[in-house]
Image (cartoon, rainbow, N blue to C red; front, side):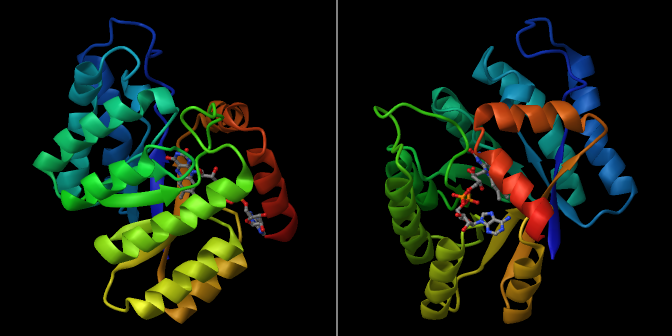
Length: 252
Ligand SMILES: Cc1cc2nc3c(=O)[nH]c(=O)nc-3n(C[C@H](O)[C@H](O)[C@H](O)COP(=O)(O)OP(=O)(O)OC[C@H]3O[C@@H](n4cnc5c(N)ncnc54)[C@H](O)[C@@H]3O)c2cc1C
């Protein structure tokens, strides 16, 4: 099993402050240096809003690059999380720029967004590394599927596209139906490399079962001392996340 650490950037100046400077870059890449010094077997994952994407995408790119370069020098995969729908176009722009410099960069795509299928085909043609999730942000029906059955149907459809056109993607879900479909698709496409990805502490017995069957499983682990802002942010983004977290404490 492999880890995927999301270093907290909460020590950074708030993204609403336009005076972010070189100091920001220094403190952003230091968690990667600490992970490397401790020789943690992990990839790295970041959220673009913590690098100023809401100010300006070029500015955010300039802040993310040193962190990606530190990850590249370490030889680990650098993942870019996807956030609210209003940030998707700029996040993809940043991702494409990162991909020009390092081929081991991954991007999260959300099955609940109507635009995702088109994004997926285009990005796979660029040999993008995709992490497929259902989507954690509450969106409006003009941009997103909002009903659970619709989102699940999309997720299953996008999975098929990933197995047909992609490689080295991550299937990030705790949903047994999505996982069973992935296992079935993996049997039909035995040469397509992929991994499962799940949050730390959720469905731990299942992770071990999957690893025993063959597929790799990555655990997404928030990293750093300021865990509380991260935790409350996730709940604010989508209160249903608390059910997943509480269930994980109860059932493991
Ligand atoms: C590695 C990773 C990275 C992510 N990155 C992003 C990101 O960048 N952007 C983003 O928008 N979202 C991200 N997410 C969150 C994602 O979008 C979903 O909000 C979250 O994963 C919940 O959806 P789900 O597919 O796990 O299943 P849900 O729809 O929450 O649950 C479906 C079913 O799964 C089963 N289940 C879930 N948890 C448990 C449990 N603990 N025990 C037993 N059964 C359970 C239950 O049967 C449940 O009914 C990420 C998720 C993961 C795992």
